[in-house]
Image 1 (cartoon, helix red, strand yellow):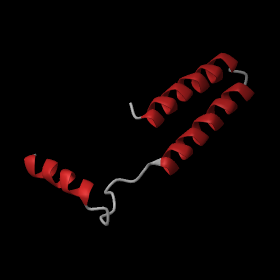
Image 2 (cartoon, rainbow, N blue to C red):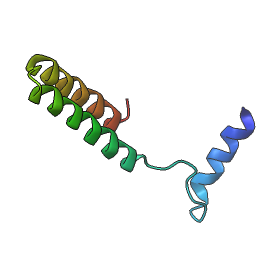
Image 3 (cartoon, rainbow, N blue to C red):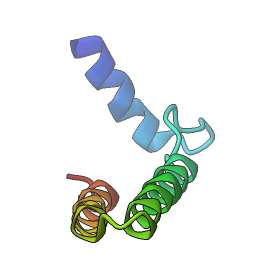
Length: 69
């Protein structure tokens, strides 16, 4: 555990080394698109309260994901 913390500290000073993790922006867009499509389909099938609730809930989740919580 201590070794990992030290490597993380060293990476702050070494700007040439790429970051290990990806930003996840593409995945977030894909999840948002699939969720919006699914909720729109529920609304089109007549389940308006369920589709609207899904859109609100997914919006809150995506907002929290975006801000890093």
